[in-house]
Image 1 (cartoon, rainbow, N blue to C red):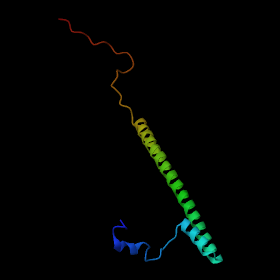
Image 2: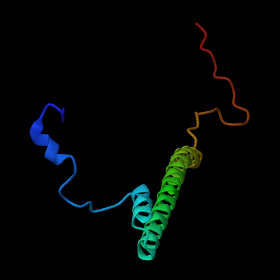
Image 3: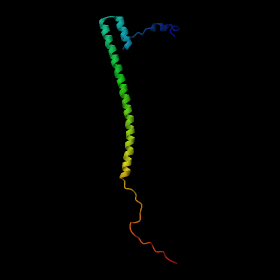
Image 4: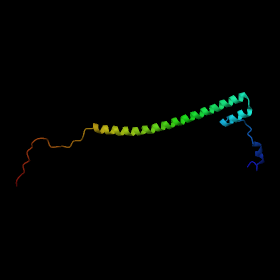
Length: 113
């Protein structure tokens, strides 16, 4: 596309400076500049990238553990609901059927025709 459009040839390199370096870019800058200050700064940048990567992995691990705990607690909630409903059923007085009283009761007399 650049070969077909002559006006894009001037945009081969960006006119603005980058706002941030990548880890690999910092190493490249240190190797090109060869000054003690450039090497120190690039080492600090690389160490910062390494720390950020470690923090991100720790954050992902914490997020994963939190979701596991949430799922486990959801299961506990369901179990507790079942347990509470069973206890409530046991606390209610049972419905008793009307039974004959204990003891002797004479048979009702049959009327003769």
